[in-house]
Length: 416
Image (cartoon, rainbow, N blue to C red; front, top):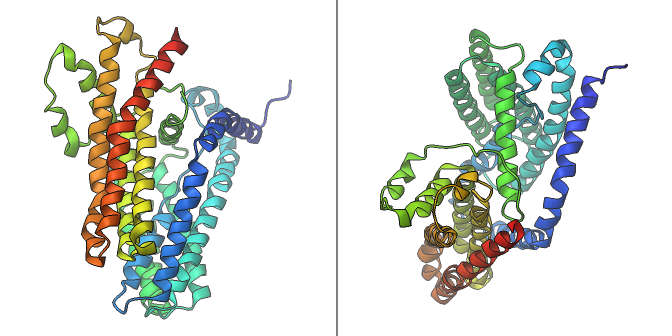
């Protein structure tokens, strides 16, 4: 019997993942996310056009370029579809695994390069108005080259034996990427190339001095698990997604909130769901989405987008998006066996989810409102800011609890 090729194994796993994800993508499309995404993009385009028409003389060209380009250059994910069982079943074929990993590089590298190119082209109209001395075409080539080098460096990080070594080399790569990006945006081409060349040599020597695996099985498997969990949490906002045990993060800056929950039978579910939100990827995504909403709100409010109504719309959109993400909390522990073992009323679970959801949602809404509260009144657009806040609070306090109860009641009926 002919043995399946290593490339066929990769293709089969990739196809299986996307085939299994298709129903959730359909549910996501039905939920209105494409419409909201289109609205966000149109709002961003309007803000960007207004900025280009009235570019302030003190605009931070270098800082904006570094902030826009560094993340897309330095972030280098790698989907390998590897599983723990592969340490046993694929290890004998480790000599062929370079072809398997090459497929993963193509799968992730090409979209990453396209994303970098798109961000760079979006930034170029701003760059041409700034003090940069590098030609636009040279800047694009340099950015793409840095992305390719970042992908290669990220692979060397994955191969490092020690976890702390991987962590510190990743930090060093991000810092070097930011510095080199700023150099290409601000300085002349030969200075930027000199800095980039020296940085490449220094990082290469550091990578070479550290012990490495030939193929980092455990690192790649752990990374694949994290990626799968992120997809599960994201899709969980739209449908019931079977999930493995969630990864736990410490997030010490939030732990004080849990200490305020009283230990009692009545607060058991509140304690559970509060920790679930604070210490899993669900909370991490909600935090990042809130920070992105604050940045988008600041840009929209500072530009006085559409007389302030556009900025108010940005606020409402991000409140809705954060709520969409937090709704995945209703799916947490749904299939846990212990719920049927401990004598806790199911109605307490619903009340706890509503309570935790409301508290987290109000904090996110307050943070999202900060840039609007500061900037819109200075432009004489206080009414727009207050109306956006009123819409957000009405959704959180009046509409949201009923939706959660209805969703969890539907889940009970499906289980029965």
